[in-house]
Amino acid sequence: MKRIYSLIICFVILALLAGTSVASAQKQTPEDSMKTHDTASADTTFAHFFLQDPMMNVVWGQSHSVVDGSGGVHMTFYDSNYIYYAHCANNCGDPANWLVLSLFNVGMLDSLDEPTLGVDASGYPRLMWYADYSGDEAYYYAECNANCTDNSAYWSSVTVVSINSLAYPHNPRYAALDTQGRPRLVYPMTGGFYYLTCDTSCTTAANWNTTTISTPDLLWPNALQLVFDLNDQPRVLGFDNNTTALLYAECNSSCTNAANWDSVGLFAPIDYNSYYSFVLRVDTQGRPRIAYFDGNNNNVLYYAWSNASPLLPGNWSSYTLNYPTNDLYWSLDLALDSQDRPSVAYATYDLDLSYLTCTANCETTNPTWHQQFIETGDELNISYPIPTNPDCMSSSWMVIGYPSLALDAADNPNVSYWVRHAQFLCDDGYGNLKTLYDAKSIRFATSGGTAPNNRQVYLPLIIR
Image (tube, rainbow, N blue to C red; front, side):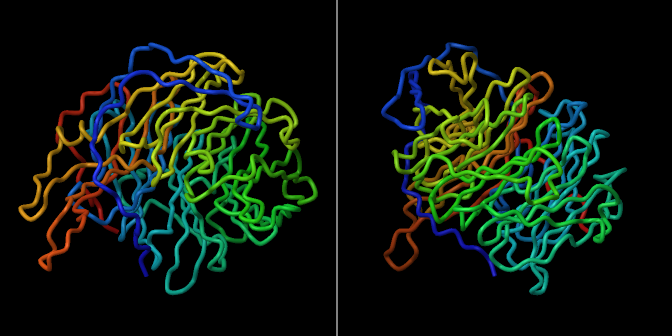
């Protein structure tokens, strides 16, 4: 059974946004908004290319990118057939430096597999995903310690836990490695969530442990994501369908003891219609930072933070980033640079991929942000044109989003994202006009690089 996209996209004029934008700051409520500044910083130059043949129309939108301690980039993404692992050791703006492996088969509910990636201190990848294989829904873990793009035989995998149909992931942030490279996983249940941990030999199912975490007053958690601070303390963010609040949970010691967890609801009510519309990070002091969309306020993008006792709602502050956002594809990612300053990647109203960076006073009422574009639909149309079909009026690339943003040690951005090509106002032969989606792919962009136009990595390179 496939998940069928039912979003209807109207024809849009793809143009670069002109001028500057103003952000406003708030303490929980819009009434306290204050103006901020937009910098005139020089834009980063990005190299872009496809990670999959763009004429293939089976790739799903979500990808996950990670930068290792040596500056190498690791990525996972998936289509209707396989989960892929991709790696580049250096100069990752050149597609010739990438190797890609088709690694595992996707499940029956292929669009829900949501593979997520971690890299340990030695630069070795650890992969988790959900799949329904022959009616058995489960989370899986796989790792590799040598020759990881050569052949799937170098990977070992295990079924971590079998689940019911309501506990599948909704974004690729539900699993993470702690600072010691140990895998952890969260997934929802009614009235809380499960926290799964493994400390050693994690391709042995018996070495995984489950802790059941209750979230009082937050009854229907969903779309959970997990991060760790530098002390290996877990922080969890999700959405509670009962209170329409963001669910924040944390533990500071002995976290396999459920009594050591606490949770709180934040920023309710939020109009939530996307599984990718909020993201959690922690700074080097372990303090939480959140970027999220709220559809109650014209799909406004917020940046929020707490510098002390985040389980108390009054200790959170936020402000709006009033840059045009997309009202169909609520997707974004947040990263913190070496100075703990936030950067946000998201799709705009014109279906371009925007990159916002805060340069000063980021957690105050007077922040300074800068906007640029990672890639626009117009740029993609020029670099990789697809002709309009004879029975259609027009066609265009759209940078839909679902970004995965990772910064390297020098704070250079690396981002993977989903693009889609459409033919508009096409005659179906019966006098009706329709939109035809004829290509979609994962793009990768990084600052600098030498990727020429029309270069792409073709898959599959290796089939299991």
